[in-house]
Image (tube, rainbow, N blue to C red; front, top):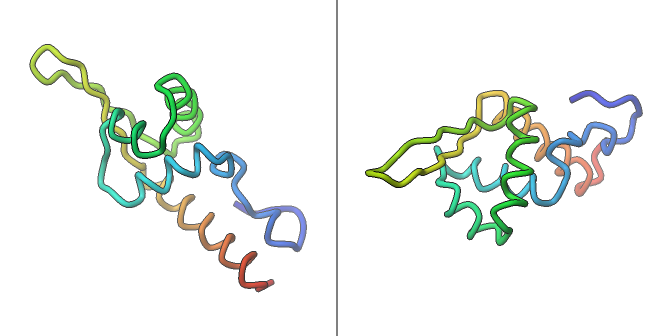
Length: 103
């Protein structure tokens, strides 16, 4: 993402920047995919809050949602898309520039 100003903060992706969405992206970046309940428990949020933020990330093209049945039980699997992985890597790069004082 390219910002309008010269300070690195202008390059932060606002979609990722919300704490819950950042937590989701970080957890998914560390795995090929994660089950909804595992992710919910890992980042310590409610089902409804996780769902809300997943929709935002999915609408941005950053997260893929796969709903399957295991026996008669529904399961939701989440993974980063290629665009999502690139966006997260870019976001982390901007954070490094900010925290290290690099222009």
